[in-house]
Image 1 (cartoon, protein in one colour):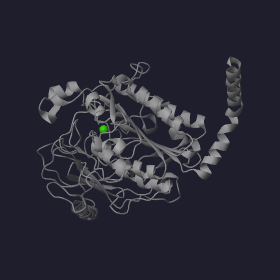
Image 2 (tube, helix red, strand yellow; image 1 turned 120 degrees about the vertical axis):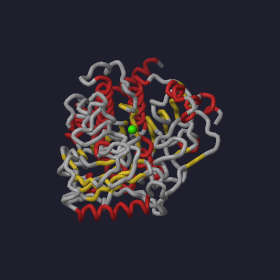
Image 3 (cartoon, helix red, strand yellow; image 1 turned 30 degrees about the horizontal axis):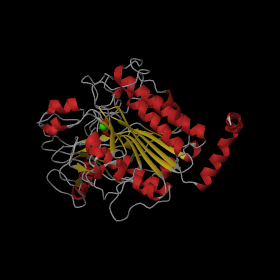
Image 4 (cartoon, helix red, strand yellow; image 1 turned 90 degrees about the horizontal axis):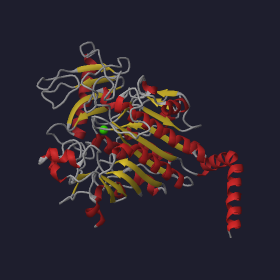
Length: 499
Ligand SMILES: [Ca+2]
């Protein structure tokens, strides 16, 4: 018996050795002809435009992302739809503005969901995961969800067959909740819950290990599903919203940029693990990997510093409607399909993933509702002369429309008041500011007076946006509602085991 096992093992090892070098090609060829592509979306948290080397960082070392950019395509005008987490994530999942799906603000939480919120992404919304699952994809999500921590709103209720991660932001710990007290019902917040599917499996997690553990789970998911089409949504927790981002021992204290740099260098390592695994399994030529961030970095008080991330050379901090908040560093990688070492400078957004993935997998884009994103396949593959599909793009802060972009022009609208603005202080009323965000990368030159006709055109487009998506104290004609439940319970080991 023992001999037989040894023989089997030996044969296995030998055939593995022999086949390793040649097995990649047949699998690639078979996959590309018969199977729709796999999708992997790596979505970092609060990582700024200037935080990685392909986008100009000189302090954070990112060799794997450099390679990804060398072998793939950089998108330099790729936008999210909000300067903060929850609304930005609602868009990448639904292909819609967060104002469309009611995830831009709610009376209990404000602009990002807090633990035990009765609100979440409405179960009737169709996520990209649901579209792909219906086409036979294996769908998995690893990391930070932040679209509702109650059972009807969890990833497993929104199209993901597998979920490993934290249902909200990793800075919403029990200790932080205790300090908040009554605010956001902070005193009820449980220890940070790690969930497997719809159950809490760990309460109070060591955040230093998040990137490492998430990466191991991601590699496992890819290995397990290598023979079928899969969609892996991988929203990383780091660098995130804490003062000092977390990293494992191998990275802690190793960068030239403190905890922020350490966490970014670990994210870079994590990306390398994923790309290497795809190549090793011979499925790289049938897998589209998109690497991006959910919004710009908050940046230190001294904006020349990089210790809390940087959006330079773009203007402004995360959490606002600045270019630095909305434009995120993006790389797309799909060997032999996406042209290596190229750059797309056309406006594209996270809302485009749903329609584009639907087309690539031959699924249908929902037609019973408005979807704001577009099919950007021509821009992805570098088709000659391909242009942005956007006639207009809106920059909202919660329910307030603050800016509008058309072509190279971004107009900040005149506002009587606002809670936060990238160009004006609280208490000031803002005047129209017009920037050419293509030629004036740092939004330094207001040319509103030189181009009154463009200001006028953008004001008309703003009014169109307000009528559709709403504005302060004014509902839009085509807004849908968020999900809401009665009596939400804290996600704990006890409550979720009762489900
Ligand atoms: Ca964020």
